[in-house]
Image (cartoon, rainbow, N blue to C red; front, side, top):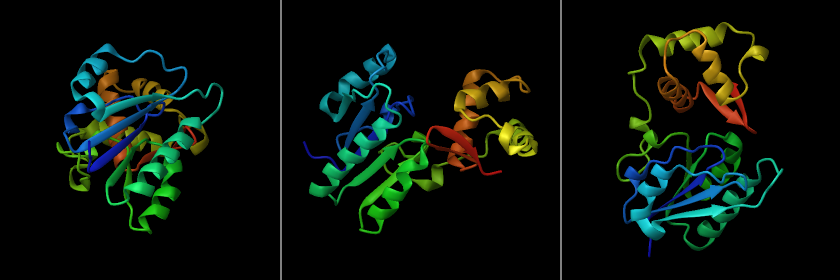
Length: 201
């Protein structure tokens, strides 16, 4: 089957898969780490109806940091070499892919990285205009202000650490905090580099 768009998911880096953006024109390849043996049942149930449109690939990379990145780059290269007219999307919060993406863009390859499925519309199309919203409210502003006042070397260096830190001074539940963190990634207030959270504050 022919696809117009291909989404490559770094499942070690992001686990929230939105099947709403999948249709007959979208192919999704989910790259999974060797130790990721517990995939949520509800996700599997959502994915089953799409058949071959969504493919799982588990990589044997025990103890090898960032090994999945190389496999995503490999498969992207395979796709581009034979079908460079299509749209390619890497779903990962890690900025390590960006130099390659810039290189390919300069060669007229339609490729980009997203940090949230909110950056795609219901048809899987890239859409910067809907990438972020202004509904985060006062909590979003207060969280950013508190992080900005912290010495840079004391800010949380992982997403889980950031969630725990935010939880210490807000009454938000984990799901609400996750949404705020996602919005911070979308707005490029925070980003990941080699698995570490970094800040643009």
